[in-house]
Length: 310
Image (cartoon, rainbow, N blue to C red; front, side):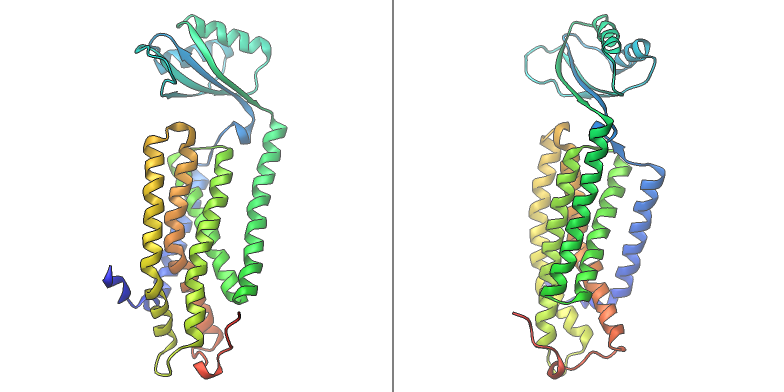
């Protein structure tokens, strides 16, 4: 990847920002028109894991549920857990909260299709789901605020702001892709989102730290744009190698992990991809444009630059 160390990255800073804005708008459009496929952790309801002894089609299950309850349910066929019956089929059914009478009618209707085993039953009330939603948003907001404070103290305020803008970009892109693919969002999504924030911030800090170091040791004959490009050249290979190693693991989780951790794996994969490029395309580019504009297009010489903080 030696060619990556020769690219003058900050020459295209404005194009980076335009690209980031366009992708954010596309993601917001996906959220607006497709919406998120919220699981019962967030909406409240009943999740039933039913394993039939004989082969039963999804249309048969859907018809039985509709006839028993007079409503539609989200039905998903999953891999059969355990056993050596080649005819067995297994489904996950998501319904609103049901009364005991409604559940009895549902189970009676399913029995007519085939003998079955209730592998799992999980009920979440609307109160619990609302509290989980509030706590998830609060956790993400606290993480963003603390990271602004940390970067502002460790580096400078403008770097802190641009780093958090990159994090917001990563979350919007992740939500947009999740909306497009309609991957179900469960409580795993919260853990994945916070993990993505931590990974993205780590990668962004590496880039900003190198910018800060080179800013205070800039050569006299080196322009501000050249210094910023050199800083990215020194860390871009490391960022790509780290990102690729994480992505390979996440792809394996998506392929082999099954539906149970699909929302976790997809969220982390998209967030890792966005976090890897946003450190340069969003955080570094925004800081470069903001810093250059703050100095009226002419950054102070190295002799006048502030000493680096310990």
